[in-house]
Length: 295
Image 1 (cartoon, helix red, strand yellow):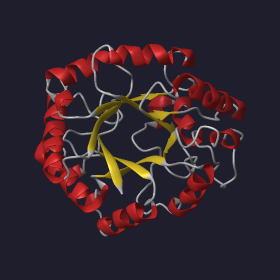
Image 2 (cartoon, helix red, strand yellow):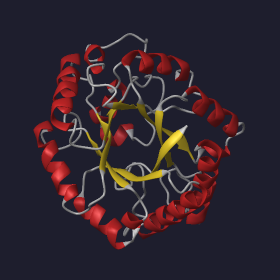
Image 3 (cartoon, rainbow, N blue to C red):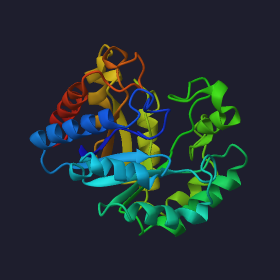
Image 4 (tube, rainbow, N blue to C red):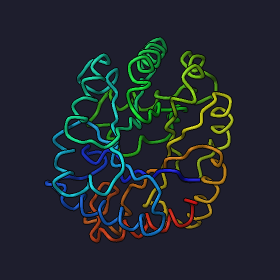
């Protein structure tokens, strides 16, 4: 069952939060504060994590402190992809950690770090080895992103093909396992870093890859798994049936679940990146999920 919840995903990234509608992030802060209070009312001991932020921005963390968010959560999370999207070297990871540690005393989790095989599988193999050498023991929690490649017939949710150009296609090659379920080069060495290193794997609504993923995760020795339950998906027909199955199949892992994506009918604008018109609606969703799944 759920051992930790993450409140939103990359809130300082336009692909996940429309900050034209919330330029000061005050609505976001109110939403997270209300959700944190609702979670505490249901499960006081459940770990609450802010993030994960991308880019890694200490000014954003300071802003969350001024809004009282850091008083409501138990950890802050970072996402970093220096071999694919970030404009800094993989060897600067220690600097990024120190920048955040300078503005908060909360534990730091790295809930997405990875490398694509867009150019060559050897790049991902190097990225996994170097990431492990640089970060294991330096952050309280590390999740490699991800286990599975994204099928080419699916869209990369929250991403924009026309705007991103070739960067868009890297999203389809982040897995340790190809779309045809065959292993990549880096998969062979991942077991060396488990269970200390976890995996982040998102599942689409009624994702047919769920059971196959669990087989790979167990074979690799993974204990810590991060995934998500979508607020937007919760309004689909049979949503609870899918959520129940997802949590049941993932039972046995130390599970961190991210709550994000605004339902179209709840947003200021009808889009999953929009701030909700009523922040309490997000808090109500979080409350219901932890009541149902966090023992």
